[in-house]
Length: 256
Image 1 (cartoon, one colour):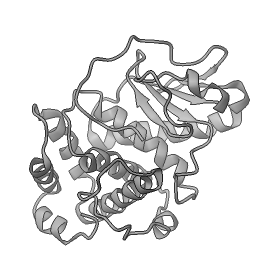
Image 2 (cartoon, one colour):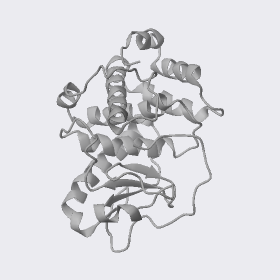
Image 3 (tube, helix red, strand yellow):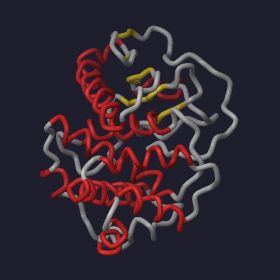
Image 4 (cartoon, helix red, strand yellow):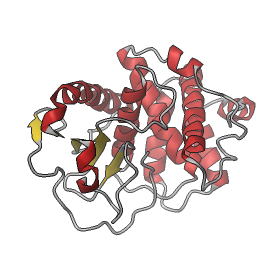
């Protein structure tokens, strides 16, 4: 999954899609491999729901982006920030195109667990949240804060459109042997997924306890930061965004 970080020199801009891809109109232009027409309609719907919902939650103008549904055989030709392709099946957001592109695989990597009807939409909304956050410059933060933002945002979209996460959350191991702040890399892909799932549990719990306002506060707070956010500052930012009782609540959470 993509991750927010400090601004870096971006590679030369390139086209969003490999040759021969077709398009669907919408608030987010959607490009897809011709053989993925059925899948494109479903993913485009997730994208449209998330795009409008996140803009409302955050009270911001949504960023200008393009979405790309990539066939497996074209994965190496998808736009990216680095010279080497990303691992197959992992969605990501890249600013190597103009406008930036949300790159989605035709099939999620097997590492994505649990597999429920919420897995794909959550993955789409996660990367979409990165696109919203990176529509402005963001300084580097600890990994747990940079990934909590899109995990909580994707859960907020699900709440708004009525997608139940009960089954999905019930299949997550809430005790993987580390906390979100104690997680350290490099690690195996399965541990990375456990880290993301732990952040999802924390994000859902925060939404239930404090509502969606904390997300908007956190986005704006991160946009205002002008220096690298260390561990102590990251914890303070989250507690302040949660509001009264936030610090005590975080201290009580086993994920944290």
